[in-house]
Length: 299
Image (cartoon, rainbow, N blue to C red; front, top):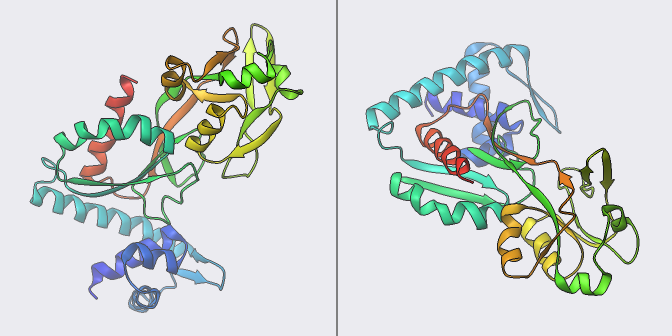
């Protein structure tokens, strides 16, 4: 193994906080990664990492060394990009993770345009509503609704998703049309619960009309932590849904959903693109971010 492999192994362990995860992203064995870091510490005569059976933490000396190594590796990748012509023709594999409804209804239909522009970029798309460990799972970027508070990520706000309340005609026929949002806390009304994967709790919704404000959790008999499953439950008449307009629009047009509480306002949900702050911003990631900005400007 050369010096580059040693530095890269150290960087990935710091970012992942785990030899096991670092080994997975580098396609090496855990033993090899551990040996590379030990070789680096021996050469530098400095302890870079504190290891326990449960976790790996960087030492103060290791943190300072990490910051400099990340810049060096980024400069090397820039040099490779220029020599290979990647700044003019970005290429390579790009790992992104996006919410399932957004992937199905927005990104996948638009990807032919991205492919025409950048035919040598191969996108590996993780599709889920769970909180992905961007650094530990070696993901280049994520798109997520709601605020991103992870300090190790750079979060760019790309758009605001307008929200509304909707229900299937079968549900309204059975339970009646609620005249006020507060009715959703009482029988016979119910919602479909959206389960936050980060906390395991049901997301509440706040509605405003003039000076009046109502925060609801609602009664539910089914909850889901995936946007497509959540929508499917609402279409089946299991309860009232809180949906971004882009998800609801085709089903309102087809008559599968009806809008509710149209004189009430729900705060928009910000959509963020996030990537590791200390990771080199490659040419392929730069053009993907620019394309997302362009796509969302017409959203």
